[in-house]
Image (cartoon, rainbow, N blue to C red):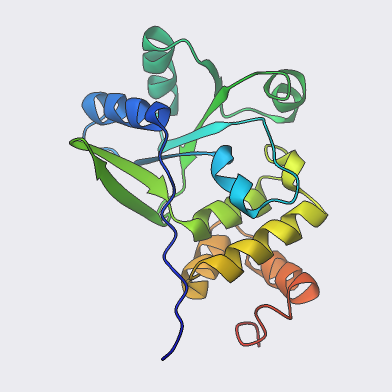
Length: 193
């Protein structure tokens, strides 16, 4: 029998569920997704105590969501943070919540928890985002990135068509392919020709 890796299904925190419930109530027909960097700990060599929650919502609604959350939650919120804000505030913040634009055709899954539909990124999206947003995810760069990718690939089934297609939407396809073939050829020998 052929061994198939399991599909990635993260543990959603009560925090993520609460935020999702709020978003689905106030922004009913909009696409969004939510995830937390704590999900990455299972792939890391050095566990990170810092948890950033990332919420992405359809283009044009980021600011709206930001103000809605600001009025209803006590989180430290950051709207499309630039390098300076990341260096000055997010790196010092205890539990930052970052709000960004959702890239169209992003690979997203849904889970229903207590009648709340929670939209979260598929593993392929998370990997590409970590690889692409070097500033925001500065603590996963270098050797840690290789380690993270290797563990994710070994533990879960990865849809490479989806991975590269999303990477292409982020203008990172070639960079990602060369990163994988330079660092993880032994793990994905069949994938990259």
